[in-house]
Length: 520
Image (cartoon, rainbow, N blue to C red):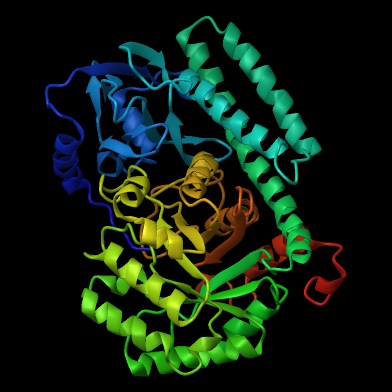
């Protein structure tokens, strides 16, 4: 569930607590790096102007930067930036055995792709020497290396990536941009051209993931047929947020979106009473009758804090034997589990639910994390939480891991591949999916957006679906998912976003005879 959890006032204190544990001495040597930051016109930005740009004019309360271990993507510290003589400055910790390569994750935008999380990693070496750098130039070279790595992995993947003419044209433009960047003689030119190169790289990364994701989704059809396991791509939405509603409009529209082998409904479960389960049962039965596969929640992140471990165990036990819940196709045994709003004992809850689902039902087990990089606390930062809380037993009982992604306050963008690839590597052999997706939470003021900031919310949402549903198939061992959170509000009734998702799906499977009644 999308929740507004931005604990800026607590972050500095929490960061200090965790830094004591991470570093043996508060006086440990630091490496000061000063960044000169320029805009698209080559104008150098003051520190105040940088803060405005990094937060889309919200201000310092929305600043989210973090020193990251570039190999593990663990957050080392948060909010280290400061104003030094008008320049954006960061003191990196001296390289240590625990974190030999510190880099910097920031939020930054480009004209054509909107806001992303970017990782400055100094050519993959980390920052270990005092320096004054042109930010846009450094970011361009780091982003190019990360993009080239993503591109090379897909060229050698199965199926190999077949670039479109649009992608090839972008590649030519990128090469030309870096030739000009290498010849730039002044800081202003390096900043202006560097920013241009970053924009082109961000466009190319989005197109790479979109095109390769579409090709891999089609490839899953062949693989599923050959291995006989029936592991087709998953195209899903989240529904039943209003459990008292008639399931017919939601499920019927879903049945018209996707073919039976692809169509999934993620049933949102926000209560644990028998009366509530009876309402969920109505949705499960109707979905089953429409050949819709279901992912049941144990339980939504919004209710975890209210459940003690004993109450949670009881609720799981009752759910797994509730009449007709045997029709649920798979179970999500934790939702957005690293979120700071979930309360205590999450590792124990996940372990119990996963073990019970495996032993009592034999159904597939999924676990959903929340994309937090630098936005909250060290404890809740995605990979920190995984390294601390996911045990070997939990891993053994999982069949798939998924990530909940919201761009309005936790942009991902260019680093989508970096994060999803690292997540997949930590759970080898497990299916990888996007477990929850939304563009803008209508209940909060958004800080950030993917895509050009000139687009309306509807136009931005359409572009986001066009890019990110396919991207959820673009990483090794990925099976899609996406599970649009606002389906009930934004798509039921075959609204414009429903049409966009339908068009994306049909563009992937165009030519398959057995999808003709969904994609005429």
